Image (tube, rainbow, N blue to C red; front, side, top):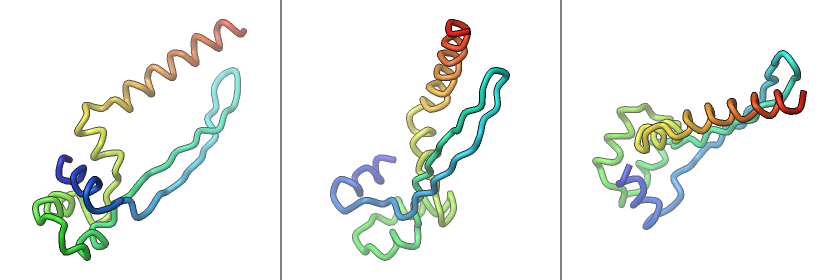
Length: 100
C-alpha cells in the first residue's frame, strides 16, 4: 500500500476504471436506493509506466489484472468501511424508530 501511495504522490493517479452501481433496498417500512462506486486499477496500464517499481506491480498482479481499490484500502486500514456501514445501519434503525 505504501508503494502505491508513493506512486500516486510522485507519478500519477492509478485509477483507470470506476464502476457505478445502484440497487433498491427493501425494508419493512420503506424502499430506498443504495448507490456504490468501485475504483479499479488496471495493472496492464500501470505496466506501461517504466518508472513504477516492480515490487508494486508484482503485488498487484497477485490480486489480478483488474484490482478493486476498495479491497486494498480496507485490508490495509483494518476494515473501517464495514464498521461505518454497521454504524450507518444502526443509526438508520434508530431514526426509523424515532420517526415512527
